[in-house]
Structure formats: structure tokens, C-alpha cells
View: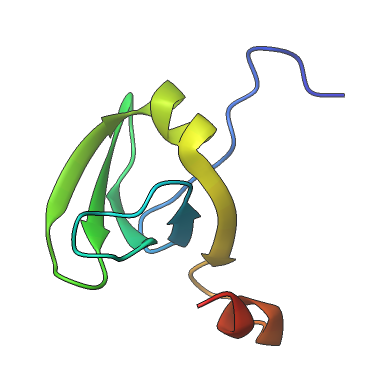
Length: 79
């Protein structure tokens, strides 16, 4: 059972989908670095964004790919 201090193990190289679209229209982001803040790169325009971890965890709707794992067909459909 996860308590309120549980941190999901995000790692650099993951692709995530966020609730709100970037002004360029992209919702798919690559995680560049992880810590207290998460650095993201928009896959559509390449813009970098630094987001506090708590805000990022609330904004993520789906994890599309994890480094070292094959891409699932479901993740391809969500694009």
C-alpha cells in the first residue's frame, strides 16, 4: 500500500503524457532529468521545461515508455 510519501520512480528517458497540452499542441514529453524538480523536453517542438516534482506527478496522465522496455501497442495508440 502506498502512503502519502510514496514517490513514483521516474527516470530519465521515460516518455509521459501530461494533462494540459503545450502551446505548440504537444502532450508527449521526454523526461531529461529527475530530482526534486523534473526537467522535460516537448517531443513536438523541443522546448525544455523544469517542473516541481509534486506538480509533475499530478499532471501525468500516462507513462508511454520506460527505457529498456519494448514500446507497447497501447502506448502507440495514445499518440
